Amino acid sequence: MSTPSFLIRDVTIIDGTGASPVPDQALVVEGRRIAWIGPADQAPVTSPETVVEGEGRTLLPGLINCHVHLTADGAPDTFAQAAGDSIPKATLRAARSAWATLRSGVTTVRDCGAADGVVVELAKEIERGVVPGPRVQAAGRVITMTGGHGHFIGREADGPDEVRKATRQEIKAGAAVIKIMATGGVLTPGVTPTQTALLPEELAAAAQVAHNSGRRVTTHAIGRAGIHNALLAGIDSIEHGFYLDDELLELAIDQGTFLVPTMLAVDGIIRNGQAKGIPAWVVDKAESEAEQQRKSFAAAVASGMRIAAGTDAGTPFNAHGDLARELALMVEHGLPPMQVLVAATSAAAENLGLAHDLGTLTAGKLADLSLVDGDPIADITATGRVALVVKDGVVQRNELTTTGPAVPTAL
Image (cartoon, rainbow, N blue to C red; front, side, top):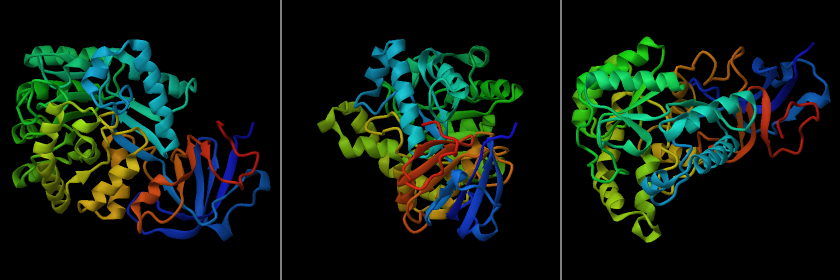
């Protein structure tokens, strides 16, 4: 039995590797994978029923968001929402967030923390085709010290033995990645963003267990001491990273550690503030750290540290499906547009350990595609003008008028 196939033609391809855009191209999808890429005038002959006319648009790999919280929806008080949630309410919200994310051209996300196994189970149901959404790499509950940042969606653990056990419990519960807390944060009452949380030996215990199980481990880390502790422990990815300096950047580069800057999280709080219902203590913390975040990101860009895109979607006024806004902030603060696209494609896939299947438009990889209006190198916001989304070889969103009726579609 032949697998469904189709041809997308008349597109400019940006393949996610950092190579220059190539106009007048075509791409063939067979089953779940990319079968062929090349000049449109050399494309394999196919029937009109299986053709998608790109009409000069830009074809990108499906975008990847390395930091989301699907059970949160951008409400002004994230802590209150999480603390007051029932499991059914959180589940329904997560499913809605996943659909909005997929429609935005993001075909893979890493969920960096949710209570009650909600997103772990959602990831399974998306994979089974029960509900629509991006591919989800779920961390499950975060691992934090007693009373530490994110305790309301976490497992509290103190000392290497407790942290080791908590990590194993999350793996048992189905976590595909481990998320730990090296510092305090903005959205938890009673903690400061820069305070040191889990200690080096605790972080190292989590990293060892995660790596022994073949999983990657990422950490929330804002303050310098916490970032340093995480790097010494061998953490794969630093979330936020507000206080990177030359010593830390050198260590991160030597180890190949990624930075996921989440510029949009602080931006959403500062742009909206108490006038729109964000608690004063959240606004105060965000405002105190905003300038340092920008300086740290600029230093990371200048150093050549590996950067992967992530929004922290679900935090106040930080909606799911807004990765294009994060990419625009990254350009605004110094990362060139092509490198921003790499951060949202191939670098993000490497950060998630999925580069063998995702992140570039390469024959043999999974057919995750985002077709956008405009040139994202000239205007990065073009990444938000989505005309077509393909995940695993199936069309998930289609705003085109010239698509053959035999093209596999989930709509």
